[in-house]
Length: 176
Length: 354
Image (tube, rainbow over all chains, first blue to last red; front, side):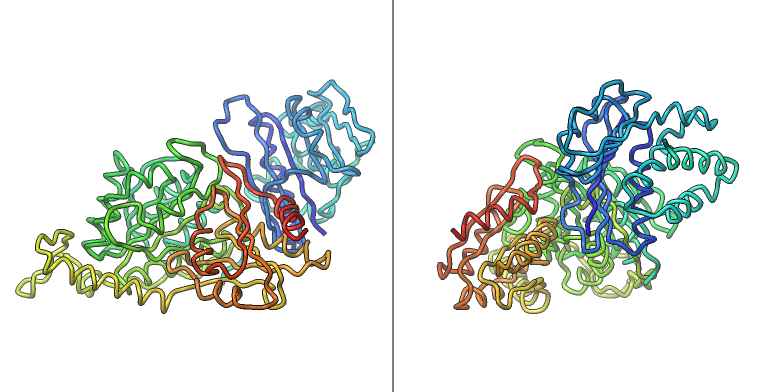
């Protein structure tokens, strides 16, 4: 079993962080993992992305060309990565910032108004955490308990924000 | 072994070097290896070492030359165009027989090329990018953990043979994050106990001279022959190679560095389809594990070799030299920063077995 995932959005939206949470969860579950950022002459406000692989065997190529799951946080990412979702795969779309619909019938499309939900939860900057919650529910790869443990570890030094973070995660997880 | 932590290749390599005794770092920025100097800039001072961002690559390699001459454990890292600039210094260090560790997180060339992963520096590294008949103990790690383990012992090896240890990585190895574990800090050897080190603390003893100039042929030739003897010894003692599922293989896929891990996936997937493939992955590219290729080239069951590289075909020359015409050697390469995928390798295998 191997899950190949791409997470993409504007720099600053926390897309690289979502990737790291999934990888930490994979490590907690004794899986083989890799995380690879897009690196290059990225400009401020430009698109950043990362490729994440969670696998039962040693990870070969960390570069994801066709993905089992894609998370897109901004509009340019949607047009770039929609064709790269495998048939039967899943795309999670941040519908707060992306007003277009995914024009594919052979994949699961999930719309998550991540920014709006994050604001509702009291943390406008935590749209990525909402998205992470939605990802864990709709795609899986790591379990709910595992994800909670990753967030607890990641925010161990910032207990003041942990409560809001967990609220954002739950909001994404309990979408619908 | 400590608990596994998630770390970027470049940073993990820097930490591996520190654990292996690196105390002096000299470098100049270039993508995709910038996390090495960045990490070193704060980390090396925690362990009592020092860091200089030099004014150029030339300065950096010559600082390495100087620090190595004084018996320090020193490292410099760069990426392709930066390594081109360092070649003169490397050649001097090899003639002066000083130990140091050099890292190249290769990007695509020629010229400034691009910043994405490539393996176009194989020739430069093992065939002599600088002038003269020199070699370096050169490793091409495939994973972050393998790189860290190589760095951990790199200074010991370098001092044992008095040759630079060279790590030929690429942008992929530098940028990937993988779980990695570290061994404890090594005990540091005292520079004063090194019989080549010009520490300035040996009054009355025989003078130690760091030098790469031998004007007289009657001195320069024996000096060169000594170097060659040492390189022969490296071939005998330090050659490393991974053989994966080669025993009954009809097709042997080969590649070095990060391509090795991609070949492994392709081999597993082809095996699942019932196709008998295996992999030879040189871990040292100098010394080159030629004997391993000879062994399989002589095997009846092996039908052909497929060499995969992120260049236009460089290591394939060494592969062909050892396969020696006994079996066909096919090639698959990507250029300009594209990384070959397992699917492309599988497709190529299906094409060549038709």
